Length: 370
Ligand code: SF4
Image (cartoon, rainbow, N blue to C red):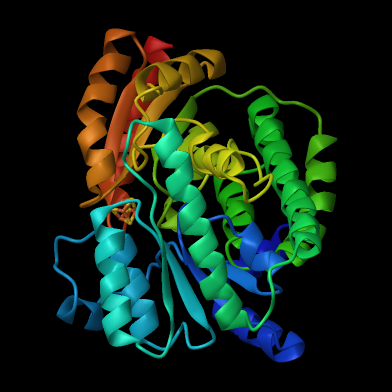
């Protein structure tokens, strides 16, 4: 049932090249998070999201500091190795310094591929924020029109919104199934399904997701112990999720930028200022967005209590947005008697023995505490 998703993750570049050859449509590389892919679909192109890989680093170190996160460094490594040759243009958001730096490096190293920046504002005035987002999307659409050679039309947008709404609903259904029945699939299977959506054309991905969600939703519910929530940016390296499965730590929910933070926003409803604002800022709290009206500490506390779960902070080394919030969140959860731990990864890691030992110890601690 999951092999197609595993294959999409293993062979993402080849699948994208084949798709491009077959359809003749343009491919836009999206550097996550929070650019509305709906506008790319509306322009007849296909968004491919890059979140870093497990490949060893060599050439990227010439262009990026060794204290940049390995999400950005491995993305650059992919580009330098020709693994993004099929991409016609790149879209970056300004979610962190590392990503902004990467955008500048891409502009210099790949001058023949347009780099479009979608600037997410760090301001407290909601009105100004909305006006700014509107300017950003209008400019991004004009640039994408030039790249794709297609006009942005109301009809194209309407069809794209319907497709992405369906996709978003299916992913949220998948999350609901896991909350209700965490024994239905392993962590590796779950995050392989979610990750495959980064690479597959939305229409194809939606077609694959539908039957899987239906089958999983009809399975008998098995309650599980040793329940955890993972919190961070993205569950990479994906292989590490297998350690949770081997140890018997059940991930029942997450607080990830590539997970519930993204999908809790819902799909884009339109390109007016309010819809855009709701798309970017409407979901659960995120370390990469400035929104003083949200408190990630109490959000995580409620999530842990309602799921009867401990919290594991999945930290990517040199990820500043997460590193700044982690100490405060950890203390707050401990004060409220929620078991919490953290580990740090680099995306090119191949051995997880040290982390597995810590996860095993955390499982034993939870068995006493919960
Ligand atoms: S949010 Fe963190 S992991 Fe993602 S690109 Fe920025 S620094 Fe790297």
